[in-house]
Figure 1 (cartoon, rainbow, N blue to C red):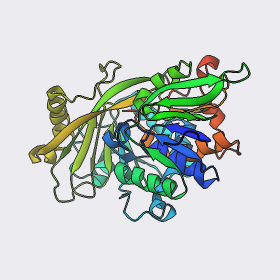
Figure 2 (figure 1 turned 180 degrees about the vertical axis):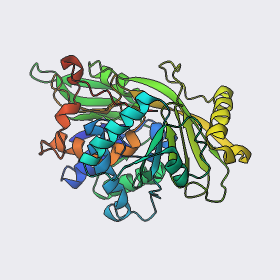
Figure 3 (figure 1 turned 30 degrees about the horizontal axis):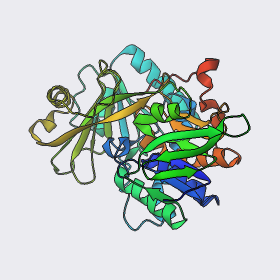
Figure 4 (figure 1 turned 90 degrees about the vertical axis):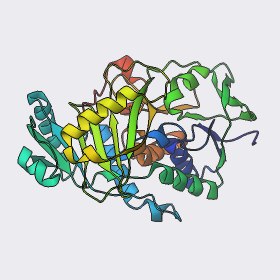
Length: 385
C-alpha cells in the first residue's frame, strides 16, 4: 500500500471512483481510493439504478441534467470496453392527490426553465405511455423521455478502469480505522489509518455512503446524515412490455423493466427507522406484491428471482452535502445523497474534483455545503421515494 497520497478518497462506490477519475483527469494522479469490501459493494450495487432528471429543486435538477449528458457518452468518454447499458426509456411520475399534482406542475415549470422536455399528462395520456397502467385514482402524471436506467456495476467499473489508467490506486478490502489531524494548530488533515497501514495525506474526501457519519466523526466532524434501509426485488426476465420507469411518491414505489427483461422495483417505508440493516424481509415482499399488481396488473404472473436491501444515506432536506468543510482544512464531503447518489455521480465527480483542486465550479456547489444547515438554507427536495 502507498504510504502517502495527495488525496485519499474513502468509499469505493460509484461516487468515490468518479471523484478519483475526475481528479486524475485534471492532473491530480496521486490519488488513493479506499474501499472496505469490493467496489460497488454498498449502496451503488444495491440501488434500483434509475437515472432521472425530474426534480423539484434547482441543484438536484441541474446536477441530474449534466449527469445524464455524461451517461449518454460514457462508454466512449471513459474508453470502456464493456457497456454501461444506459437505456433512456423515460420516467412516468404519478400524482394521486391535489397537493401532489400541484407540486408536479411547479416541478415541471422549473424543469422546463432548464430546457428539459418534460410533459404534463392526463390519466389517459399516461396510459398511452404505459398501456397496462391502472389509472384508478390517478389525477395526472409527468413524463420525460431522456430519463432512464443504467447498470451500476458497469458504471463503477468504467470509472475505476479509467482512473487506474491515469495512475489512481484503488485498494479494496481495506477498512479505514481513523483520520489524523494536526499541523500548526489548525487541525488540518494529515493522514488516514487503515487495516493496510497508514497513509499520509493532506486531503480526505468522504464518499462513504451509508457510513458517512462514522467517517466524518473520525475527523471530529458531526454531519446531519443518517442511514435508512430501502428494499428492492428483481423478477425473472420476460418479453419487453414497459419502456419507462413508473414511479409514485404517493405509494412510495418505483418499477422499471431492464434491457434484459427483468423488472426491478423498490418500495420506501415511511416507518423505517435509521440504522445499518441490509436484511430484506418477507413483509416487504408481501407489500410490494400487493401494490405492484394493483398498479401494473400484468406483472401478477411474473416470478420473483431475489430481493435485497441497501442503505439510503439521508440528510434533513434530502439533498446531498458536497464540498469542503472549512473547520477542518483538507476534509471534503460527498455524502447524504438520500437514495440518488448513483444517478448524480457523474456530476458529483466533476464538482468534487473542482472543489478539491480549487478550480472554478461548473455549478454553484457552495449552495450544497455543510454550513447550509446552520444557516437554515435548506433545499427540501419534494421528489423522493
